[in-house]
Length: 144
Length: 332
Image 1: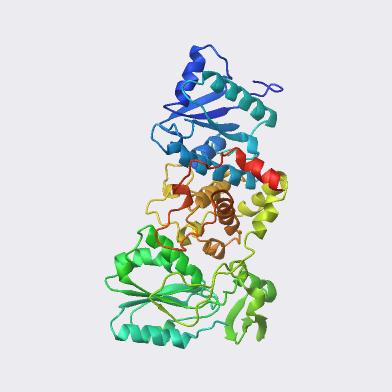
Image 2 (image 1 turned 180 degrees about the horizontal axis):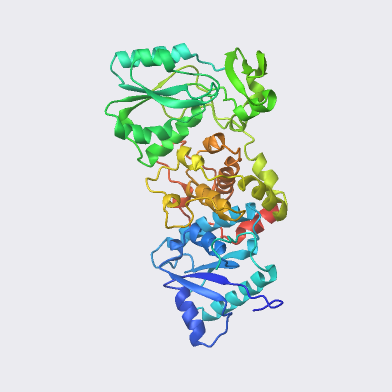
C-alpha cells in the first residue's frame, strides 16, 4: 500500500485463538495483504491495554487495529466483550482529543476468515495511507 | 458562606473524642496561605481549637486519605464528608480499599467551595490574607491594606457551579440538612468540545495539556487512583516523567489516567482543583462519564456500595467500537 511513496506502519494486535489463526489462513491461501502490517500476538483481545495502543502510536505506528474472536466466541468466554467496551471508550476519547478516528479500529476475525483478514488489512492500510503520516500522536523521543 | 460553622464542627469532634467513639479526627488546617488548606490529623481538643479550619477553601476530599490512615492509625477515625466526598467514600468501600469499621463518618452540608484562581482573577496576585465575612471573602493583598470584598457566589469552583448532588450517600451521622441530587449542566462543556471540528479539538487539548508539568498531583489526589504500584511510577516504562518537548507524551498520560478511573470516577473534581497549571482535567473524566451514560445506561459511581462499574461489566448487545462515531454523527 503506497500513497505518494508513503507506506504506513500498521500494528495489528491479533488474538491467539481466532485472528492470529485467521492471518495464518490468509497466508496459507496465498491471499495478499500489506507487508506494513506488523502483527503482535496477544492471548486474547482483552489483553490489549489502552497503553499498548498509545505506545504504538508514540513509537511511530500510523494505525492500530485490534482483532479478536467474534463476540460470543471468545476462547475465554467473555474477554472480547470487555475489549468491546474498553475500545469503544478509548476510541471515543481519542476522537475527543482531535485524533483522526480512522487510525484505530476493532475488527472481529475468526480462524476461518482468512479472506476477511486480508480484506480488512487491505482496507485499513488504504484508509491509513490516505490519512498520511501520524503526526499528532508521535513522540520524537521514542522514534529511532 | 457554609451552612455549618467551625465551632459546630469542633464541638462535634471534641465530643466524639471525649466519649471515646473516635481516637483521631481527620480535618483541615491552614497551610502556607489562608486559601491553601491542607488535610490534617488531630488527636486532642487543644489541637482542634488551635488549628482546625472550616471555610470556603476546604475543598479537599478526605475519602482517599482513609486508605492510608485506616492502615496506619490504630483506632477509629472521625472524618467529615461533604456530599461529593461521600460518593468517593462509597466507591472506595466498593473496591474494599479501607476498613469501614475503623471510620466514623459525619456528613456535613456544603454550599460550594471557592476557587482561588478565580479570586486571583479579581484581586490579583500577592494575597496576604483572606477572611470570611458573611457571604463574601475579604481579600487583602500585599499591595493594599484595604481588603477587597469578593462574593463567594462569584468565585465558586467550576465543579461546584455544576454540583451534581447535595445528598449524602454514606454517613454514620449527619450534621445539618441533607440535600438532594441535582440536575446539573456538567456535560455542557463536553458537548461543546464534541461539537468542534477535530482540528479545533486537537488545538484545544494541545494548548491545555502541553502546560502539564507532570507533577502527578491529579493522580495523587484522585480518590479513584489508589493503586499501590502505578504504571507511571515505573522507571523502565519510559513514560514516568515529562518529555522536554511538545509531544504526545502528556496527552497519553492524561488519557491513561482518565481511562484507569473510567467508570469509577465519581466526578468529584479534585483533579482540576489541585492542578497547578489549571488544566480542566475534569473534562476528560466527564467525557468518559458522558459516554458511559450514553452507551451503557446511566451510571453514577459511588451512588451505592457494591455496584458493578461499567467497564468491568458487559452485555452481549453492547455497541461496537466502530459504531461509536456513527451514533454521534447521526445525533449531531
